[in-house]
Image (cartoon, rainbow, N blue to C red):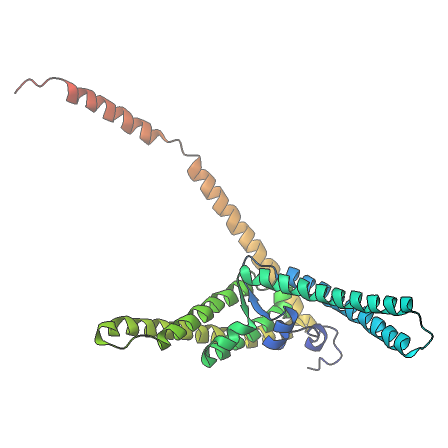
Length: 290
């Protein structure tokens, strides 16, 4: 089937798809993954604001510098004009520095709330970095898919999955560095071996996560291709509505059954308490000695 002229073709709706970790780093100002408490949209907004402020500052500084050159070359220019040109140049530089400060503060706040940065990837062992990059690229591909954006993958939290892998990347890197300086001796062998096993577990978890996300990419893309076909899309919509109705009916039955349980009169407890009270009275009566 030819999708080259279809408005729903992948080439149409994937124009903004991130294709590499480096592009993500650029968008989030050297940040790859943000922690659950950080907000990527806010960081992107601050990045654009800071970049705009820097651009304005550079433009003003360029005008000031040009004015300084022109007034310096003009023998008839006054000291006041030279001072104004220098002031414009100074203001441009200050505005540019303000933009850089905005970016630095935003980045520092994001890292404080939990983040994987370019430095984290640089410090990590190569095999850790390779696996993590594959996972991020796969997650970005899934996140930009038509199926994901239309809500056809309910309950899928890609950010939570990546943060899970990010924590294994960070802890694995730290463990790798500590192991490099671990003491040698028979008395330390058991603990060192345990640490190495934990390190292998971190790497294995990263590779398994990357493999699984990468494997899901093909299935998601296949679903996207089906969604671009009008007939198949209509069938999927019908199946989706049917499933939604079945789920609603099941939840209705579940609610009714739960309500039936809660409506049962708790007579057993009263009867048991009454019998227990009577028996306690008999137990307190004096014994006849028979």
